[in-house]
Image (cartoon, rainbow, N blue to C red; front, side):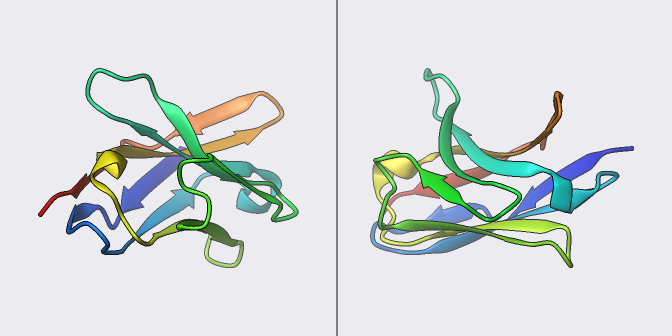
Length: 115
């Protein structure tokens, strides 16, 4: 059974930081390209950052220089370090794993940036 479990969301002040984790099980993690997506109320889900099997990273323009995606293949876990948070970063953040047509999602974790 495949499971992707996000954690680390919560309330942060503008300019603050949060670190999200995505713990996986049931997949051969090192084979999978991984990504973080987010969905704000009334908006479509969009890519925040992705990381390939070879750890090549890609970021949405809105988070470049503020967010860092990483993976630990030994722990089957992906991370998103979010710094200099802005109110517009408020959303539900989802973890995604993709490989050879298999596509899996986590249940999401809420991130709220507010003073």
